[in-house]
Image 1 (spheres, rainbow, N blue to C red):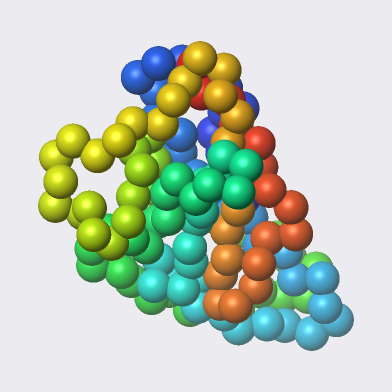
Image 2: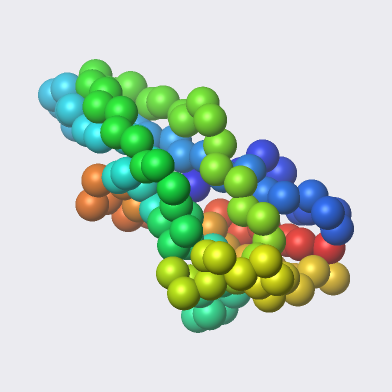
Length: 124
């Protein structure tokens, strides 16, 4: 998972992207569209947000990564700093994530592959 910043002031929404690397010796074809990726934001063991909870119009984008190639997504996904669940998509006042220096961890999965490590962000 890649973020546009490490810390976010009040009112700034994290922009989430993904970097994929083909560490294999052969080319790899993979769907990298929003239909195949899930960003998850956690605070400790508490899941605050998933990009798929209230996703509308997921899309496919099949790409071939040559051996050794790395690519980063062009269009980031924005976290609006609210708690998500499939039951709260229509609510206008979902709970806001605490700031004040609170730490959150961003992970991503795509096509069945989980990120090797999380990306820590701080909200103020």
